[in-house]
Amino acid sequence: MIKLVCTSLLLLLTLFSTAQVGDKFPMLIGQLVNGKAVDLPESTEGKYTLIGMSWSKKAQESFESWVNPAWSKFVAKTGMMDELYDINLYFVPMFVGTKKSAMDNVMKRMKAKSDPDFFPYVLFYKGDLKLYEEKLKLKDPAKTYLFLLDATGKIVHTTSGRYTENKMLEIEKIILEN
Image (tube, rainbow, N blue to C red; front, top):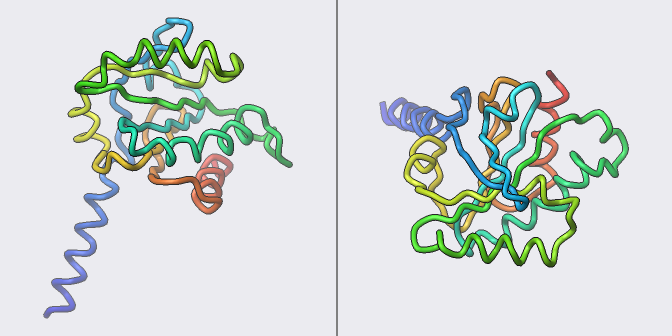
């Protein structure tokens, strides 16, 4: 009996922790460095999209750990067989709560100090976090959350935390299978 209860609880926990897989990614309107507005997932429909999101300084290391590997694989295509990938890529720093006012200064610093080739892949969001916490199960401000969307904007895979090769291999596998 105890084994059945434990198994049921484990199954229920798994369902709730991955509840967003299969759902449409909630609308998120952000701004590129050049001021252009981008509507996720609407503007990405037609091909796979990888979105990395974080909203806290605590997640900076985690966020940055994904930038070079994802850029190299999906944009620069520096690895063997990387030319097989044709996906959208967005890194979304989220400015929420008292941090909203910092967004313009961060964008200016990025524009002055970063490689302009990277600008189309960074989407700045300023607004409320509550919808995304609920819909995407964002819980830990120290983590980066990644969402792989299919060509229709439906979430087909999620992961969080620092970059690892295994996490990237799982993303690649899903993209190549379809």
